[in-house]
Image (cartoon, rainbow, N blue to C red; front, side, top):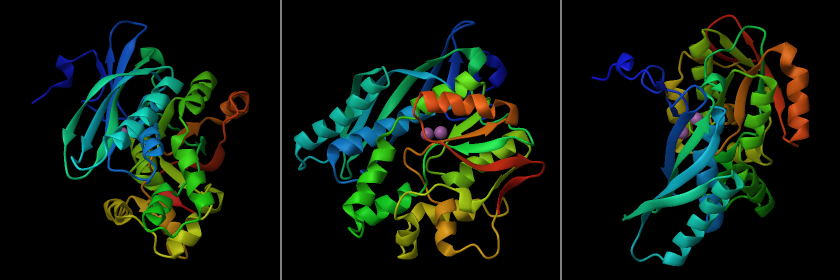
Amino acid sequence: MFNAADFPNLLVGLDAPDDAAVYRIDDERAIIQTMDFFPPVVDDAYSFGAIAAANAMSDVYAMGGEVIFGLNIAAWREDLALELLSDIMRGGADKLREGGGVIAGGHTITDQEPKYGVAVTGIVNPQHILTKGGAHPGDLLILTKPLGTGILTTAGKRAIISTNDLNNAIEWMMTLNRDASRAALAAGIKAMTDITGFALAGHAFEMALAAQVQFRFRFEQLPLLDGALELAKQGSIPGGTTRNRDYLQGKVFLPENLSDEWEAVVFDPQTSGGLLMAVPSGILDSLAREFKARETDYWIVGEVVEGFGVQIA
Ligand code: CO
Ligand code: CO
């Protein structure tokens, strides 16, 4: 058994799992370590690589850090063209570079199902780590990317989506959370996470639980990718949605009249989703300025209240 007290420099990881592990080097520097990899979510190899890297890097940004370098992790089938794998890795390398980092190596194994991702190392000032906890009643909830990537990529696999809608979703998934993270840090936000496979509902629940509060969202205010509701209505719903809904029974409360397609959005597993932050009202104006200075999109989607769990109203 590990005892957190034996690892005083491991600031985040053993006690309360967060977006990434954080290891303190000295008073000004801590290392952030995270990794993620998965099978292709879109057909285009370069885009898939860029999305997978942006998704892996996101946990560093969710902690308020900056990316230093990454290591590729890949699985490849022997009969698939190696050119495709190098396109995937080019997409990943370009994202690391965009974030000010570099791919410094990696490892590929042979496997039936191709997979790609990045083990990402970041750095953060230990005094300025953003964690899931720390939300207070009265805070506003802000989200920085529209929802529905699970619905849209599922529709993409079934080839029932317009090129425009798919390309728009790809654009969002390739967008780094770096600028949104820097804006949050500059404005003095404390509580933040990124929205990924556990959906808006699941990641919001983690933040609410960590702070012993309730997160309340108004579903009409949730930003959606173009096509998300229509495609969900047509049954384009990934398998993870049901798993999320089952796991969140008794933790996430929905209005009785919420339509199936909106429910699909609330529990939709996201790939490279946006940041969710709890914003004290006194900080809102300066946060808005920080977003504007970085030309970063954001939506006010709800508020923190006393209570438990997540309420969709
Ligand atoms: Co995360
Ligand atoms: Co992750």
